[in-house]
Length: 233
Ligand SMILES: C[S@@+](CC[C@H](N)C(=O)[O-])C[C@H]1O[C@@H](n2cnc3c(N)ncnc32)[C@H](O)[C@@H]1O
Image (tube, rainbow, N blue to C red; front, side, top):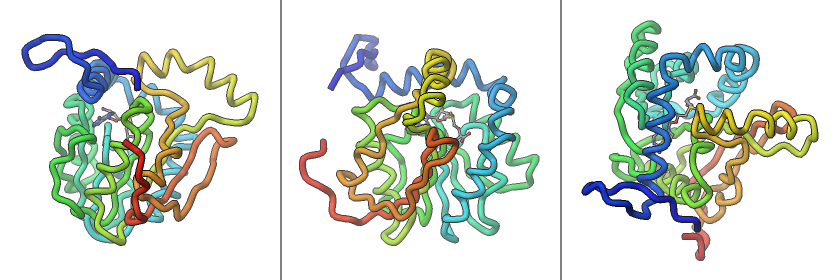
């Protein structure tokens, strides 16, 4: 694993990939939050809303955790009557999510938290959602993230993921290559998260695995509780 460098509590450099990812995300999203919805608006209205609706059709009634809630783009799709908690690393993104919840008249508990260290007991949620979030994580943190999402999902619950996917189509691949430096700088993100390689190790069974947008986006509905494979760290 390539160990990212970060500063520890005493300000000394340490090799802690969780802290390094948190710092990078915080830097990017505190900067981009004021213009996030404008920048993403074209994508949001031309295709993301359609895929959010498709994803949330798989949500179960009850308690729902929106991981990396961002500015709250998923809010219009929360199942009516569900009890929702949204967490994010970035206070500036959470402030916008709070304003959106107010506008939509929704009661959503919003908390600053790292998705790799969720402050919830095991099995707290019926549905755990992460849309365009795991793309912010390096390879080494994909499995720990999936395990943490699985931990807070109740047995029989669902994990719903939407993320970019390295397309097999040449035109889409070129488009992704062209925009990847911008995605990295602006959103601390990548087009080729390796999430899918770690599902079995995290004990997650895919109930739905669908490619969308010319296979540039993956939609996953996962059931926790399959026996975790040994060997993943
Ligand atoms: C591209 S935005 C997506 C926001 C929203 N889910 C959506 O679909 O529009 C990624 C969000 O994930 C959050 N994020 C990234 N890594 C995180 C982490 N380790 N813990 C908590 N939030 C994180 C970022 O702060 C940002 O708000």
